[in-house]
Length: 168
Image 1 (cartoon, one colour):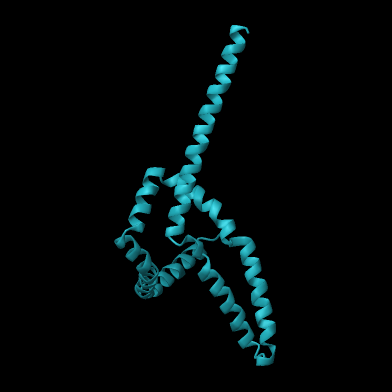
Image 2 (cartoon, helix red, strand yellow):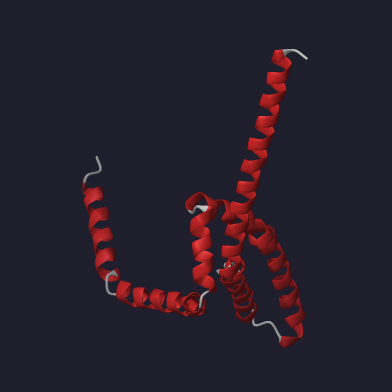
């Protein structure tokens, strides 16, 4: 066998080893991201959207003053809406993008550290309290924001008036 051929085969073997190692590292990194997302209950991220859409249908049903005998119609449309949402934001649609997002932001070591934290008693407490904390934080922000709304609206009006004055 010629020296060139032997070198080519060695290079190809080395490339295969490196590629398989990189693939294994990548798969392991993605696995860590998946485990973290599982612990963080990321599969429930879209639940509020589903609930909001269900509420929209129920509200429209009530506004139409539909009789209770038409409740099956509401439920049929709600089920169809869930199917449409599943196609767009079901876990099987979100998961690959979220894994890519988390692997782009966190190393495998960092993800494993996050996993260790969320598996700890404090991490579990954090996960259980986080939805309530987020909801209450949003409420607090909303209340504080309401005091700024009049001023922001005035500023918008002033800017609009100033722009109107500058029109040729």
